[in-house]
Image (cartoon, rainbow, N blue to C red; front, side, top):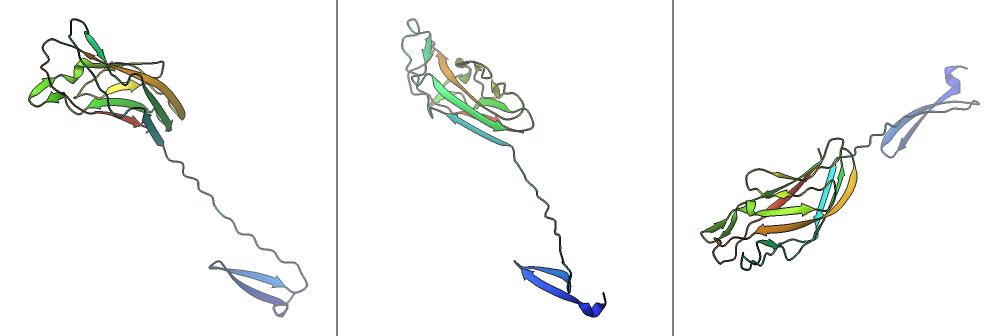
Amino acid sequence: MNIAARLLAITVLAGVLAFTTVALGHAASATAGLNISLVIASSANLSLSATALTFLADDPAIQPTVPASENPVSVQAKVRTKGTPSLDVLATDDLRSGTDVIPVSTLTWTADGTPFIGGTMSRTTPQQAASLPAGAGSYQSAYRYYLANSPLYLPGTYSSTINYTLTAP
């Protein structure tokens, strides 16, 4: 076939300029490839059924351990990661009422079932609150919080904040 028998078709579609050679009297075809890229990021979602804990301490001789009024607190952790996720808890400070202080380490918690674990609160070192397996999953349990009562505690309203951190590397 000679050059005169060929037509050059120029098409503009969705901002893409495509050239197709059309041979008169013959079928024509064109192929274009499209690469697909899918990015799935690591994710972590943590929810607690309570946003505050209240301890109503009575006489330590009668009540040596004070349970939180909100017990149990439901916890749900959802993760998607290639690594091993972690759930840690850390207090921002000791329990304070003006200048009076109760060490936050008097606060402990228990956990219902693995991979969640109980422990003792710290304001200096993050404490492991769950030992989650590598990969993706959804985990649910309950924490119960307790405060060791003492006759040395002075009357007052003491407060601090504890922060849970779920990490999916």
